[in-house]
Length: 486
Image 1 (cartoon, rainbow, N blue to C red):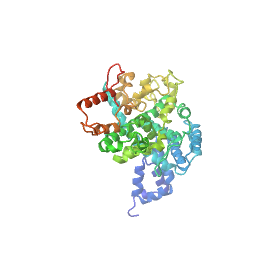
Image 2: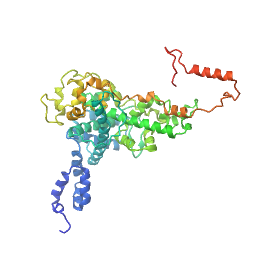
Image 3: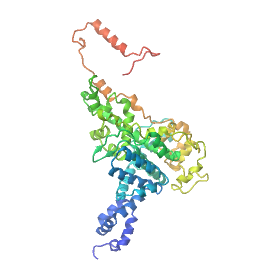
């Protein structure tokens, strides 16, 4: 037949087999656009084709959890989000997690699984790329320098090649972060309705969350999830800093001027999280943003200017001050206790990673994360999650292959020394707020020769007032007389 390629002359059965062997959704899209015949075959087998290709985008060891996450997202999208139904879903899910997770999603199968998996694949790829761009520079610096400071974000644009094992571990960690968010967060983010207000109580306490979702995982897999939490917190902290700097440059002083007797005006301000009062609540607000999940965080990362500011500060006012997510992932990590396998050899966990790397070295350790073995000297840590290793989690020490770690030089350094270099979650507490910075730039103007009542002051009165003002700003009880910062 003139104008037809040999591919289009094949039987529909063979054409379908060809579509099922396609490696990526982009290639599939290009093929069905170029060939009307293949498009017709795709239409008749859409669900099977999309599901097969979407599953192939995930590491085989991660596929069950990716399918469960896609199903969970669909269930929550369709059902009423109340405490009891969310609790029931969480309990039934955790009864099968992680080893028997297929039992849960087989009993909750929906017709739109392929579409949800395709969306999840695109989302996770975006975050894996951003994670590598913002953590591998830290690894390289630490491997070659004794003096390194971890920044909130890095403008690293070099194309980075990750191994199949590295991608698989990152996929697992991001999927588990999203699973946790869907199961336990009080708030939900629905693009059709905006951000929903938090329900009053979490479906399960943080102690229950830790016990049901985290405690049965090997310690290094708990650290994987903690690495994702620390990365997201650091990235959001960097955006917070930029929003504050831009607010100082663009906001009028009136936006941060409130009557002392009218606290409600401050609470109702769209810029409440930039005030002095909100300074100690910044970490909780970042935790709240993480609880909204990867899709919402992606919107924040990809937006700019006022749009980014509005997404970041969205839905904060006096009526929803309880939005602050105090019972989420960070609190669950704090509930984790001692490691029952503390100080034992890591050999027992080889089976948990056999799907990631089939071959072992002569010591049988190549299947486990080499950075984790280096940090813990091939022994189980004393705690399931330990704040002392925050510095190592800042560059994802449980994700990277031996070759990358060796090339960076990090394995030649003492792990105890390296872990002391960390990004502090509490840097926002020790900065001047936007309100303070704006008032410093625009101090109230008063005539130097007149008092507050408009009466002319004598030089002696003016000097006395200055001394009194200085008295108020000095901490006379301190061992050394220092100015008090207000």
